[in-house]
Length: 344
Image (cartoon, rainbow, N blue to C red; front, top):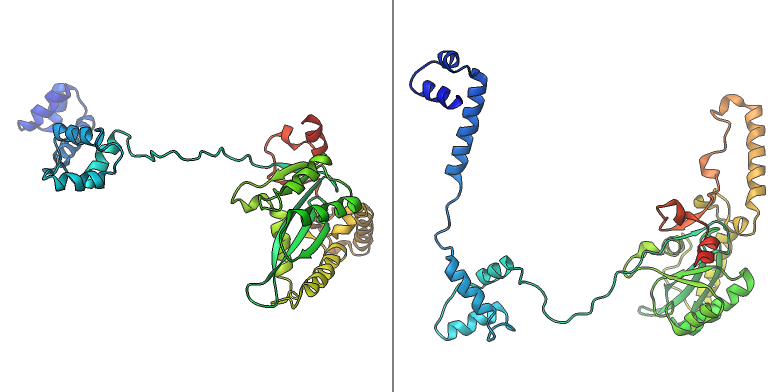
């Protein structure tokens, strides 16, 4: 009926008259006419087939030549040049690639090493001496091009620097020696995390950790976020106001690092652990200090209640329950590291 409505209006009948004869509302007829007109316009504006487009038969000959035994191991550019030298032209090099893409034939055909994706490390520590992380950073020496290597190990739960030493080179044997000293003083952790440097993956370090039954954890390649505590501490070190432009000798570098680590562990109030010092958290003194802070705030609140809007401790002074490297997403993955190791 709507076709009859259009025919009547095209013959000169008014839309009101056509509606009375066909029973089709004018709005419905007008909407249908717009849709029809748009479809006709799209068909009219649809680009025609390019004049320079190869025919299906010509594209078939190009694909046959590319897949022939003669040219199967050559590039389209090489085949193009060889055919030109022989007085034959099939198409341009770009068209050859276009034909290959249509048949999903553009890919690396050489044998390449296929490395499986590295697992994302997910570690959690609910207290000190559970997860240590370590890394090596360069300290500028007395002249350009000379550097010293600073080995630094951190307890991620307390942020305490459990070991830091400066050497002239990066070595697995030196790393093993440092670990033995740290473990003898601060205890053996459940997990030791590091990146994939030569010292971190060296045989002496691997054998030591295996003998001590310490789980080894490594960052994914080229993912610095997998070792955030070490990277953040190196920035704190090198952006310190007292950090020199260069160290005159390895003894100067060792003296500076010892003083900085002592200040960081015993004087620096860390925002990630409730504004406690790393030493207070590492050695279990944080709860007593938190109680003392609460008592001081209560006394101040009692003396001047108008100056306090709440009766709770400031959020900045709250000590977190756990420290994470790539926080697990599910509840089962949020178990303490002791349970993770027991399950393993």
